[in-house]
Image: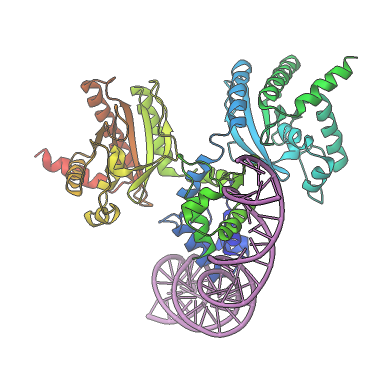
Length: 261
Length: 261
DNA sequence: TCCAATGGTTCCGAAATTTGGAACCTGATA
DNA sequence: TATCAGGTTCCAAATTTCGGAACCATTGGA
């Protein structure tokens, strides 16, 4: 096991739930002996990937990660155009917008567009969630081939919130529905009382895939309002797909053609 | 040279000016042979520290850096209280606020509080600047011992903007002035037409040191307005130093006592 | 005051990884 | 078809890493 692998193993121990770790925490989480942990933590600290609180002696992500993190997709065209469009929709509807990417069977929030409605943002950028339990996460999965989906969903099937698909068959049913309508919906899944609608957008040029969603309080919205959000999202999807060269645009227009026979 | 050292050497090649790099760029910047570069880039990509654009094949910071970067000092008390206070001042004055940390002889912007004045933010978070050329950077340096300052300033003395201290003696003169008044000022240094005033804040508990500054257009502000900013900053400094247990508070109150004799 | 626990560093030979030159592959371009 | 940039794979030599054990420094009881 290379030094880099070990370093990554340590870095991956940090999360929103565990933003800093003690020497003992790292030892317990990685299962490595004391001497190895000691040497590795020192290296990581010296190179700036970790910092050490001079008082508590606990370790936390370092200045280098902050700098690099700020560079991540800073000039990404797909995300940039999507975010601009999302801002408009969020300004019109008052709800909160999300842009996320897929990583395995999880998604990571990249951008947030706060809405005017005072719904506290509980999913800050960097947040990692099972993609199976979010509207835009499922929308991204729906864009993959069935084999790829099977390969990504862990076995045994994970325990998910009540309203999320509870097994692989239920998941595929929902994904088929998304493929048919082009829009994905979620309600009361990751967070009770919160619903969202989303879709996936691909770049024809780079093949990148991102998930875009609008999130709202289920109680505080009417069915009419949610239908309006759906229309807004569908319009945004069509517009964005055209400008980014999303290959789905062909399929979608084709299907529109056949269904309106 | 360990694998980790090499990895960091590659990661440090990325910056705001070079947010993505080709294989050849990395080879040229690190001076490593092809085979080593190839293997290392693959490792970095596989572990998530780098991503590769599927179309251009260029490398950029990966999802892992984004996630870790979001965690960096997310729950830092010193920064949190300083940011709250800074928000108030920026709301009152309309100018842009900055919080930065020192890293060697450079500073890195951690937080920005946009002002109501439409001064385009040119120093986004993650921005690295020579600390000698900013108000809060010099304020942080002024808190170090003379030996530490000498050790941090590179030799030969770097080429800095016209209004920055041009040699070590000039620097020390300005730092002494900052130590005397407690506030630091800059005008037309890193960016033409932009001025700023700042101070340094330390935590009595952890010893952390941060620099806080308010930035404005020199042309669009009057001397009276700048004097007002100075008063605001001095008040903020005193208040924050009390709550964070900054050891300077003692020295400051002592000095106030002696000067008002 | 001594003891034990916590937290962490240093040492060392065996074992694993890295290194870099060279050969090789692949897709563009002339 | 030749050439070149860009990139991967191979291999033996050189370098690092590994982890158990000994060791060191603080802290907090008993």
